[in-house]
Length: 480
Image (cartoon, rainbow, N blue to C red):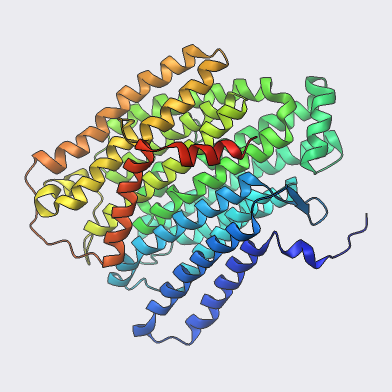
């Protein structure tokens, strides 16, 4: 097989080139910066991500393009998801600034690792063969392992990073083993070829089905779905809050893309087989996530179990096996990333030097300390609970509608039941903010950037709930 380089191939990958150049620029510039000038890294990163958003919009649109001998695809879904990953990552960096500066963690390495993680997510979104999928996934994972252990003085951070590394490596191994079996069964790593053979042979090819099982296990690990969730609460609690924010937001969009590329684009012909597996994962994730979250007093662990329950809803959209279901799952993944960024962002804002806001008690009386922050957090909590008119309600409604349309109405009823249970621990947060007395009168001194970011975050949750058509049409357009 010969491969001829064509400079026209570089146009679809301009977003990845921008992010790579940006990460290398920050890495080099940081060597020459004095401690008091470390803010330049932050400015370069934010400006670079904004440029990447613009470039992605410019090179996007039009016909689907497959370049680099079939290993990379640019299509409607990749255009949308990349822009959203860049925007959510930008919010994560804005929120992290004050926290890192107050704790002497404001090093260029944080931005370099974060940008290489963004690059890994971008590669995953546009991967068109099994090897490219795995390379993007591992680039993301290796950066996240280092970011979790970024605070070298934190023993809980080191413990969380070790647990994340061991279990993440196990998940990657499962995924790679499944890919190797699929390659053995089909003789190709190209998703289009794998899809054609899956349609032709179906369950008659037992090696292909065996590979599918390991593939679903690997995807379950990366999403943090039950019973592969054991790393999620410990990593969220042990990691520095800015890292927990980053880990809990944008990578969920990339994980959705991973599932679409592997299960839909590659193994769509085996949909009845992986649908049954996803039903089990969705039920377990919604049930266990919502029930255990009620017992949590640590807010980061509560949000971790909340993540697990939301993953169950994303799986509901995927298992529907229809364009409507995939669009609903994409809508849900994007909405969840925005909500998670806002929830963790508030924790960063109310933290200060020498104090990390992690427990539910830290939110007591927030309305008396700053009514605007309390209002934004209330909107985010209402959205996570699925209360109208917030966008979380619309996300749940779309997912449930998609599975009712394929005859899985009993699954929709279970989803509604667990949503009602989950509403308890979200409403408890609102009760603490508005009806309890604050434990401290310490003023909240967030930077203007963080205040603007949280305001945009909270208002977006409300506006997208009232006017969901724009985001929904974009998600539906990705699967036409």
